[in-house]
Image 1 (cartoon, rainbow, N blue to C red):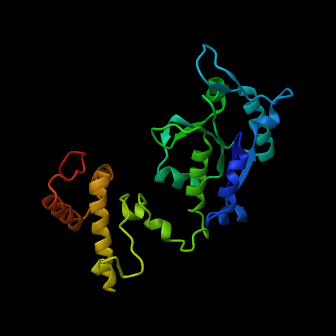
Image 2 (cartoon, helix red, strand yellow; image 1 turned 90 degrees about the vertical axis):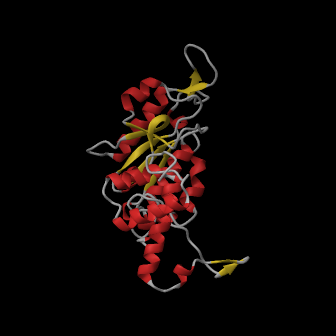
Image 3 (cartoon, rainbow, N blue to C red; image 1 turned 120 degrees about the vertical axis):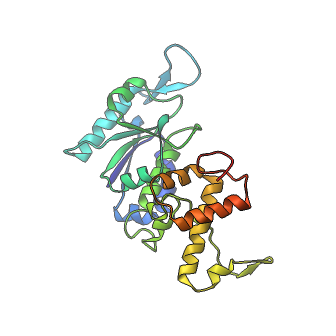
Length: 265
């Protein structure tokens, strides 16, 4: 797969592409990342890429023409039969989640547009952007961090990138966990500052360990992300044993948040 990044600050991506375990995806070409600076396609001595907003107001707006020329250069370089989608990171975009990342990880890639300043000229968005993505209800100084988040999430799902190829299947939100939160993790020493590792994890009994992890996943999800629990229930993914565990959680903590978002489980 190939991701072409349109950014005014390509140097920001160097640590992502050369550090950590996900660099395997980039170095091997499993995830081909190419950086494009609109300044290289801007006109004039100053290679201007932004201007004041019509109607007044603070901040600058990214010019449409340099972006258009950059996109044209990308299209020519990709020489593709089916044009890759152009993705803009913006507050109005659909929130990025595990399902979206999984879909991108099996795609041929995309052109990722990293906005800056007050945003991008709406005319370019209207005529050339296919999808918009948001990381959440907050504003960043640019789309680069959002692009890196998507690249990292996609890279770690590629075969051979993680030391244990099955480890990502036990991540929070993964269908293997029925979309619930992951259970807590512990490592050596067995006792740290007087706090011992849960006995179930030390039992060596695989079935007991699996059940303990499932119950912890249910408890954490009920407490912190009850809407995920509600979705799992609607999808028929909770067993009678799961429901019995949740009933115990209700009895132990009657004020816990329930699967509908109210103050009961």
